[in-house]
Length: 193
Image (cartoon, rainbow, N blue to C red):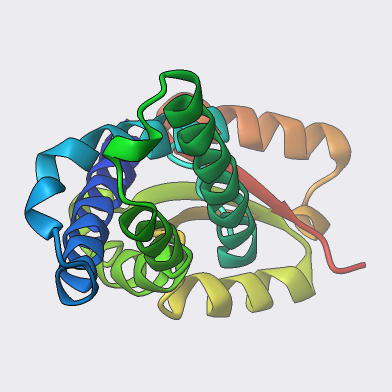
């Protein structure tokens, strides 16, 4: 839940910043900029957030490439919805297409900002989550190095279970005992062989 709120806040603030930047660019290029106040375009942030929520961008921890794809997909869908809404409501002459397209273009850069901000913020102890790691010999060393070295997901290895040290029944019993004693955000299973 705290990760969802973190991402929702981060995206909302970046969308507001992008809208302000789009309005600033329009001030330089449009002669009648005072006909287009900032608050007139706030509904677009709501549409972006709804589409991003529909694409489950806020609820999952994911790699940067997946997040980038979802942001691009959501931005294109939102642009189409925005123009469709303006046409259906016969409000297209009330809005500046320059501001909307500049806002869209700036939002295509969201994955870059999100990557750096997430990487920085997920180092904070409040946003980090403990995971149970189930792996074999090679994956144990690889995963310990990867998860300890500034990982972008904000995971800390709570406990590690090496499958080579247990029989299948013993592994099930061991994992069951660990899960009874401690709460983990997730269980990661990594096998190299």
